[in-house]
Image (cartoon, rainbow, N blue to C red; front, top):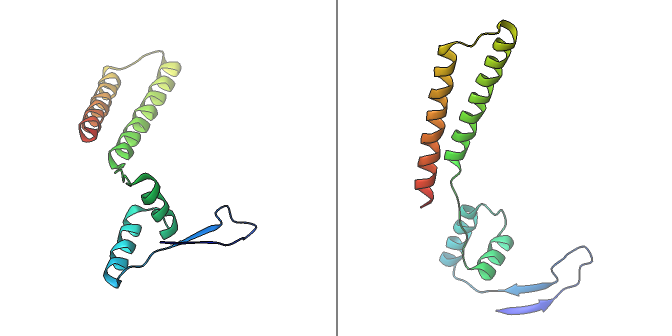
Amino acid sequence: MESTQKQTPRRKRHTTLTIRATEDEKALIMKKTEWSGLGTFNLYALTMLIRGEIKKIDLTHYHELAKEVNRIGTNINQIAKSVNTTGRIYESEIAELQERMSDIWQLLKSNLSALR
């Protein structure tokens, strides 16, 4: 690996590192760069060389959880408006909230088990 000094005033990193690779190795490295989601080869290479690993986390469950929390928040607002207007709360509204809370607990449990 070669190291050279380049001075560019706007750059934070002034040292260039060069590696040699076969075409197959380059293709594999570029595939891994794309998979990492880091955007550029430079960022991927720095991350791998400094940290030694890149963790890619699937946030699908968290998006589902956020949607469910948003739905229950909307239901709470509707029930609060109804209670403030009529002075009553209906069993069906409470049952709906309990069902939504159950959904949220199930999502939380599946998220926790996925992290283990």
